[in-house]
Length: 412
Ligand SMILES: [Zn+2]
Image (cartoon, rainbow, N blue to C red; front, side, top):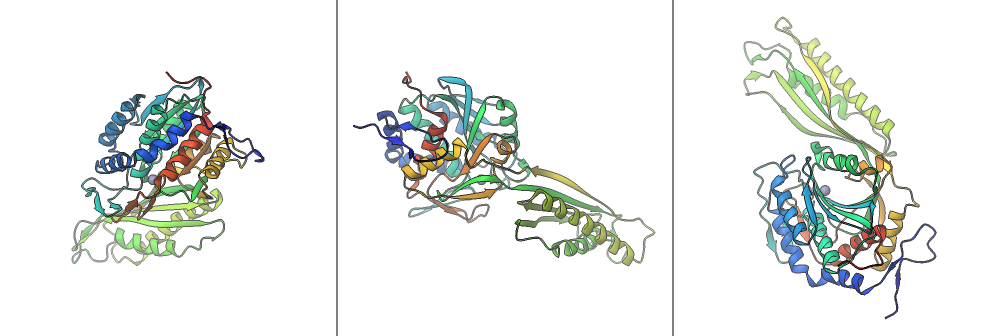
């Protein structure tokens, strides 16, 4: 058989040249032969709850799965599962990652329901698909006895969602910074996009406190919920630009103890995002001004200020830095070559993912879906359909090996 090269020679950037060896063909066909196993692992992983900061049970199952494929696996002190496949050159590392955590609180029913082809459960796609792909790609490479040129780390990381604040990826970049050449992040399903631009975001928590009292006898006293509502209405009337795209979301509200008590506190969590750091800064200032004005309005309209006043503060729960992959990056060239090989087309996207951290540190990173089709992410109606997932798995494997390279000499 002629040795075919993956990647088009006329490409302008540095293009990975993967020879289509019997080992590579065997790795690519592994997925088609093991589709039932891949679906089973996705269901098994999804049915282990992984609320934010409680990923340990799921981590230990993924650790076992990676170890069964022959990798040397450890869990670092942050909770990340790291399976190492030594390359011919162990001074350089590439990472394939999928986040372990979900947005769902403890107690959420995560039992997977099957209706025909469709699998439904919270977290089935985000990130059951990515985790199933991670363990499958590790197996496909190991069973085909491919030895990479650069060391590959197969990583299931913690803390991608919400208040996790990307702590798993922050720890990984911190630990491997000097040797880390690229990170390929698997997040959710699909093959239609490649995230090369990191969306900057901040998560803020507003807290307003006051003396509290009885709804009837203390009427007229300043009320923290009233102040929060007054401030929130001001804030949601803030005009944000369509370009650079800038968004806000009032995501969670809490406060008070009973219907007939003047509450002593009120809390609000707000997520703000922008393609521009400057707009992000403006929006955070708008929130501070709005809340300050809401508190002032409530104080001014209260009849009884003798029993105390309102205090307020805004804490930053998390920030995600922005960044962008260079259009000439070898990682993007590897992805494009993989797209060509599997006859896929994908569009560049900007989003907030684990790739934000390496990108903000000047390390090449992209985030892609791991194939199949999914929907309803972050909702209880989340679903996944595996049909066609082989294409996404091949695309991810070819991108990974395109950037790690394959050593001339075979693995033992
Ligand atoms: Zn995700």
